[in-house]
Length: 330
Image (cartoon, rainbow, N blue to C red; front, top):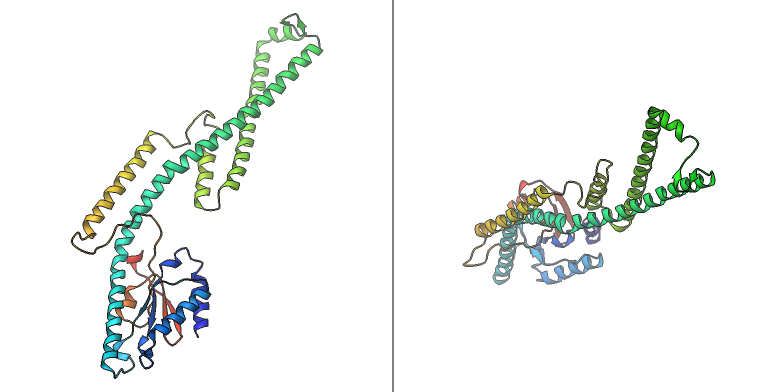
């Protein structure tokens, strides 16, 4: 039964990014009272979890006193009850901290995203735009330089020069028909501009391929790709130093988000930290920390721990998983 439990609950759990945030609760621990071996049961579960590659932290041991195995030895019963009450108190305390930690986590996430935009994403986009700009300049120089060289070489070969004067045989005809010469000039200009924007697109594709190799898959890469595509649109000058959308207004908004986040953290500290004793501590890092409590038969504790996989590790070797919904973990 233990192996079935591990396969059903733990094998998939280990792949979660928050697998180290689970609480493991051994229910019906009263069944170990006859042999007085709860430590051996806990050790067996810890070894089994370790074999699956999941290192569990503390195990909580509880049982339902109304449906428990009779414990005749008064001292033993008090020891089991004391341990159960202490663990239940810790579980309830953890449940009460969920909303507080969620507030800290949201504020921390806002600050983390704002700092990432300002300190990592924008500098990376600037570097990417510099690379793109260098490729465009090089492409333009090679293409238009080649066209100019070919034109000059062809005119020399055709003997259209009189010393330093350009005198092709069709020059008088062009001067005599200014409308035709204007149309031809516009056509030539359109062709040159089209070639330039073709080089821009080619350079952008080359930089995009490099970006795909440099950055791992994920939302961050997709966001940078969209920002780079927006910054290399034809309507934007290739000499713009900053990515599209990153100006004084954007910097002011980032600064305001950081200032507001610091203010919210201070407000949370004032609300939830008890200076005279143990209290809720500030969570400095912005990391996902969904709380997962394990329980199967503890009434209010099971009802309050919702929207998270509930792992009930039965001390006799059986288990079940329940998923409930609760807005406190939203």
